Image 1 (cartoon, rainbow, N blue to C red):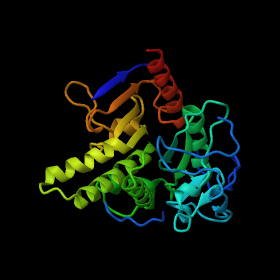
Image 2: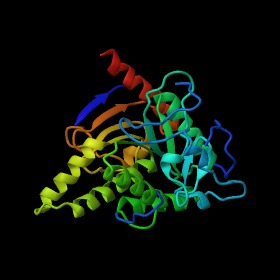
Image 3: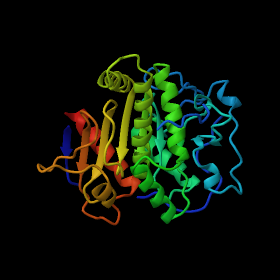
Image 4: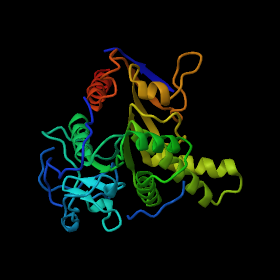
Length: 312
C-alpha cells in the first residue's frame, strides 16, 4: 500500500429545501445482492454517460418541496435536482459541473455521509466538482437524525440492514461493469462505508456468476473486472476495509476522529491496512479535531495532494 504523509468546512445539517445550486437541462434500483460548456456529453474515461443531450432533456426531477429527507433516500442527484431511480436512468441525468475551465471530462458518482440533508449533498457535490474538475452525480444517503444515522452506519459495518443508497450504488455499479464501462466513485464519511459495502456486493455477485470452477478463480476474475473498470476515492471514510480490485485513493486526516475510530486501522508499523490492494493513502494532519472532518478541509488537501503529484 502506497502512503503519502503530510502535515498541514463542513456539510451542514438541516431540512430538505429545494435546490438552489446550478441549473441545467435535464437503472432502477434492482440489486439486493450484498470546462464551461452549455451542452456536453458527460463521460467516464470510456463510458456512455449522457449529461445534457436530448435524452437528458427527458429526465424530469421530482418536486422536493414538502418531501422529507427519508422520502429522497437513495435518489439520484444531478444539476437539475433529485431524480427517482425507479423512473430515471442515471445516464439521463445532467451532472453537477465545475465552475471555470478546469474540466477533466470525467463523471464521478458521489455518496455523502451522515447528518446531510438534500440541499447539503448538492453543496458537497459542487465543492467536489470545483476541487477536482470532475462532473458529479450524487446518490443521496438520507439523514434521519444523528442516532438513526449512526445505527445505520453500524449495520453497514457488518453488511446488515436495509440501506437504499447501498442498493442504488450496487445496482449502478453492476450495470456499468456488466457493460464493460468504466466508473468512478467518491464517498465521504459514511458514504465511504456505503461504497465499500456496495463494492463487496458487486464483487460477490460477479464471482457467483463466474464460470470458473475454484472459488479463488471466481474471486480473481471478479477482482480483475473491478481493477480494470472501477476507480474509488474516499474522504474521511468510516469504512475499515474495502474489497480488493478497484483502484483506490483514500484521503485521511489524522486529526479526524471518524477515520481515526472507525476507518482503516494501522498495523504495528503505523501503516494503514484494509484499503484494498495497492491503495494509495493520502494522510495529512490539520491538528484541529473540531474541523478535521469538514468536507471542505478534505477538498483543500485533495487539491494539494494532486498538485504535488503533478509537480513531481
